[in-house]
Image 1: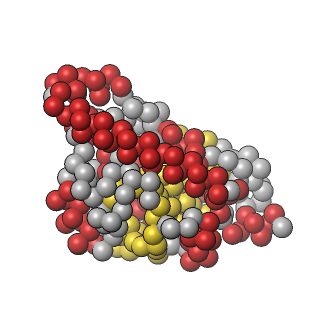
Image 2: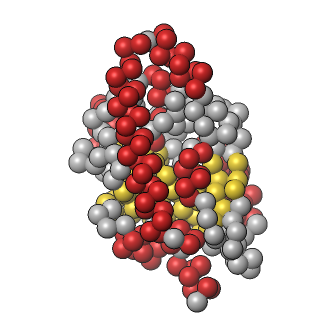
Length: 252
């Protein structure tokens, strides 16, 4: 059902959609939050924030357009797959950097520090950005060993590259959904609909074809609930502008 950071890409023709900020100063523009799933976008939205969500291949163009209208910074926000074995569903990771295709994009120190103070217990470490799902424990171990990263998603590296190009502060703040030891069943890898929601018919058809995956899918569903609850609670703590220091300075 397109759930799990390592399991949530939409179809190739999915449209990246935007939810515009309210209450953001017009001079500098809002913080841009980058997500994939519709429920992530709903949670990220709020005063001082414009949310982009959709399929990663369309994300770069949408981000470039949004930055062109003005922005205080970019945050990659939502769920991520676990690579470090100690991370469980619902655990927060505030990225120290994003590693992708042999490159490392550092995150903004001040913004990251503020998020870490707001989210007690959050892990501060590098995360990986990938172009395709990482669904099997062996593949997760290999990625962790090769990159030294603790989590993985399919949007953070795109957001980091755009932020670097435009000289904007960038952070990534993600909640673990599928732990490193968990294999994702085929039904969890079904592409999303273009609006960032699960394709329920395709999920059911996957179950009809392979009913033995039902126990694994139920475990993934429980992981989704834990991650969503953690996102909701953390978002309430982070507050206006998703913790961007520049927004606070202007508002004071």
